[in-house]
Length: 289
Ligand SMILES: C[S@@+](CC[C@H](N)C(=O)[O-])C[C@H]1O[C@@H](n2cnc3c(N)ncnc32)[C@H](O)[C@@H]1O
Image (spheres, protein in one colour):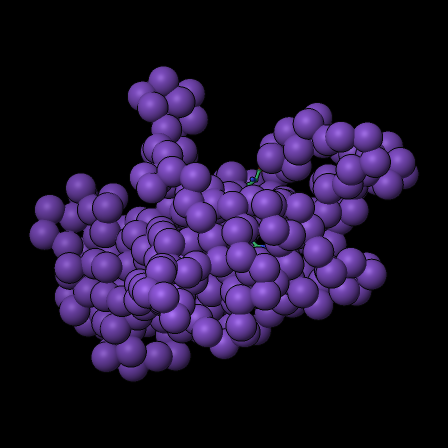
């Protein structure tokens, strides 16, 4: 299962590697991703080697049971936004492309980035930027945003952030953090990730594998703790004999990172951290996380 179909690169690679009788189930909450893959790979869908599902991976089990499945051999999640979403100005994800301040991966969902920027009070905006963007100048940026409201487009947001940062012309890092923070909250990304990781423990067969690619520390910390300890607090769990027990066994204690050549080829991979683990325990009691 590829829970983050996006532009379909990983799904295509999985299809290439599929054994006879194997199937790929691919999920995305973005209608564009599903439609484009339907258009590109109709023969794979017809041959029932590929099944596409539109939805939030927070609802992994419901999505699977909706097609009569309850178990998978492997799960891949390549978190965050796709190149398509970043490049299309109308989606509002990037400060490099002008567009409405939207940032919803699923356009059926409620709150946009503009709703947050124009609706929260200054303390709420400051907290959002500090917690989800880990931005040191959150206070100054929040003040400037409240001063400049209403903020309707990505360019207006970017101008305001630049105006609040000393040496504003070089504010690219702060801009990236502010956009990241809004995107995470608009899409409920961290809650969805936690739900999907918990669901994976129930869905992936013993011996099956999970791969998660994260792009910032808020994601990677959660993935690392969950794969190592089976919980998000990083709390070791022991059995009656004092042995450590966890539902996943990391295949490598360190996250894999792209080398220089890959970053040159694909600059968007530069902050990627890939973690891979094998499902080792069957029947770990629910709620023990
Ligand atoms: C980094 S891209 C994946 C790129 C993909 N691996 C490829 O080869 O093109 C992430 C994708 O995951 C989707 N996504 C992010 N969070 C999601 C969620 N909670 N549920 C479903 N899809 C999600 C986004 O809409 C986006 O298309």
